[in-house]
Structures are given as C-alpha cells and as structure tokens.
Length: 213
Image (cartoon, rainbow, N blue to C red; front, side, top):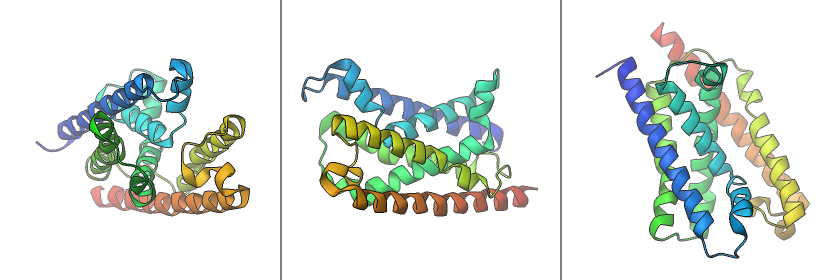
C-alpha cells in the first residue's frame, strides 16, 4: 500500500497511540497516592507538562489527518503550519527528555509504559508519518519564527504557575532551585533549539515539496 491510504493508516496508528498514552498518563496522575491533591489539581498538574501538550497536539493533528475535513476546527489541525508545529514540539519533547530528563527518574510498571509511549513511541511514530507520508510544500521560512509563540506562551504560563504554587514541571525551569538568571539562560537555550530545529523542518518541507512537484 502506498500513497494517501497508507498515509491515513499511518496517521491512524499515531493518533491511537497518542490518545492511549495520554489517557494512561492522566489516569496514573489521578489515582496516584502522591500528596492527595484531588482530581482538579491533578488535572491542572497534568496539563502543566509540555510533554502532555505536545502529545495532545500530535493526537489531534493525526486524528484530523484521518477524518474528513468537516469544520474550520478540523481544517486548522490539517493545515501544513500546525502539522509542522506538532512535528517541532514532539521532536523537542523527545530530544530534551532523552538528553536531560530520562536520567533523573526510573518509572516502573504502567508509568514506564506511559513514559516510553509519550516520550519515544509517539514522537518517533509522528515524525515518521510527517517526514514520509504527510503532504509537504506548504511551509514558509517565517513559520519557524511563528512556532516560537507556542513554547513562549507555555513558558510564561508555567513560570507564573510556579511563582504561585512553587512547583515546576521540569527541573531546568525551577526558579526556586536555580534562580531567575539560570532559568532565563536555559529558556534562551531552549528557544534557540526550537528555532534551529524549526528552520530544519521548514527546509525539509520545502525540499520535499519541490521534489514531489
């Protein structure tokens, strides 16, 4: 099988994997004995992780790649710009987790399954679909700059949340432990990483679009 049917099949596998991983992680956070914060605050904690947001973006993008476009909402997630943003965000999720965060804990059992799915399986599956089977040729160089808005808004929100609750989803943005100067330096570094990878993805999209034409 080649062409569009195989593209839809691959996107369906991505969507199913992402949704199952997100549901599993949500259940684990809700039922975790932890500090007994309750389902509302547990949900608030759940969506504070960039991993969750990037996987949710992938899940929606892959889902609407399979379903017919029946609304402007579906059209939004089927756009080249959103598909590319999802590729960027899930790729950065894998890169930062593998290089920085994986060594900081050792999940077991169901948490290990959720961890591997969210940080490795979904990113690799989505990147395989986006690189090999998604339509290409619709991105502009400026999209790499536009994509910075998502991590920027995320960073501002989690820093405000951290200042309020003194809880940060990732150690490299923990202002209480590292200080504002170090966190600012880390944020700039992550921003540069987003921009460089984003430009690489745009370059690939434009090359792939020309080659198919």
